[in-house]
Length: 393
Length: 131
Image 1: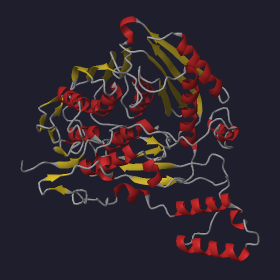
Image 2: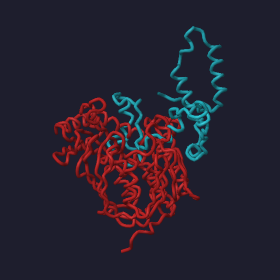
Image 3: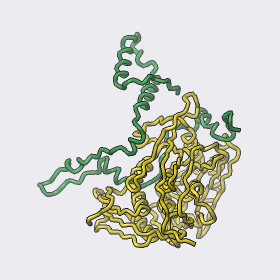
């Protein structure tokens, strides 16, 4: 135990640490995981996540102490290939998928993952949201082609789960540097209203109420209704809506809402859900298009205010920054909304693992404009990361 | 809300000045209540001006509060009282989630708010040079 590698405390930012460890090859140790909690140590969903990381790699060494409060992680080779994983239903598939999106392009062979569990919940970005906003973003980094696919085969709502998602991603030797600085204007809004194990009419009610708000802005709206039945409907009832606004320059802004899990929380009316989700999207657009300086101090942003947007929406901030870091040795730029606390921590971790620091410029906007708001231009020179394990054809 | 430009001045000084002016000028008993929104707006702008460099906020050294353990009581010199998590530890053991909760204070039922994003759509007015 002479060299522990990088040492962190606590269970927060767990996935970031393991993902960056795998990409950089640096050993990582996490201590005091819920050490003062009544129920100390790693939770089932984290154990499930570790098992998934083990499945997609070769030679990863994981040591956990008896109480589960200390984890030592020695990364192996990112192997890829066909993987099937039963995701713990405490967290949705999005939790696991976010990490896979970060790792997939850097595998030895293309990754084909089958993830089973909860596809949509109220905590993590849902599979629909990742499909609608992350996949187009990945294409901007040169990860296109027929190999990139994210498919929802079965839907599973919490608490029972029972969903199934297929994800496949091609591998790349290098990642293309990007200039995501001009978002353009919103040209269309798409969405998916889904319902499982409830009346199919629910989805239609959601669509009507969401359209009633969005139609004031743009006529090009199409919200698909997706009602899954029988074996494809998972084990628990539920419904929800994912909305995506697409701009002329190919930026995707996403908002979503899901009904409360069966037997937990207040019941939600589909009309309210549709309306609130539409408002969430407007909120995302509002922040996204405001181009003044930071109207919120970062201290406040850290604690309460969620200002999202820019060329990359809030859920994908970390993903885009990671790809920029691992790009060729060239300048990459991306315009983001104010950074989320999660992203701020991610930037610190990137510095720890890759010694790359971003240049951050707040973009000010003329004061008289009614679009008031704030964005950050993130600039970095890529690490020149090359995927040496990629098999040559 | 219109946010007037405030000449950059040291925060505390300005605050005091404002108070002094107010006392001299005030005639009615409720004079201080006038222009509260204006004052709040000014204070807000001032606070903005004082916002430190973003880079420093992200990469600057974090002052770590390591005093957590020192405050623990001991029972009979043998056992420690396990206290509920404090702020720093709370953050370290918080939920690992990338979702960024939106701002709930924006009211999207107001026409004013809706108007504020109208130009973000292709249906809105375009800048002169882009068509």
